Image 1: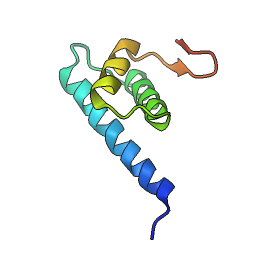
Image 2: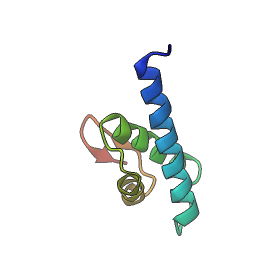
Image 3: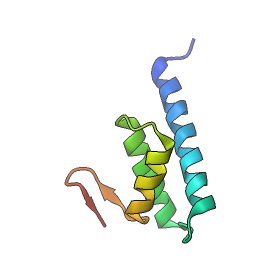
Length: 77
């Protein structure tokens, strides 16, 4: 039997993967390099903190425009 936390991590990874794929498929400007890494990190942060709706995740990542999120002070750079 696998620990519950590993199941949650796999679920989070699946949600993030689908959201990143949707962003890349539908974005007018495709996130590349650091932008995609920043979006992925933001998505993982959001999923780990309870956001599970893919539409919301995609919208929030698109609003961030590939900028890096700093959760300690809430800024995007």
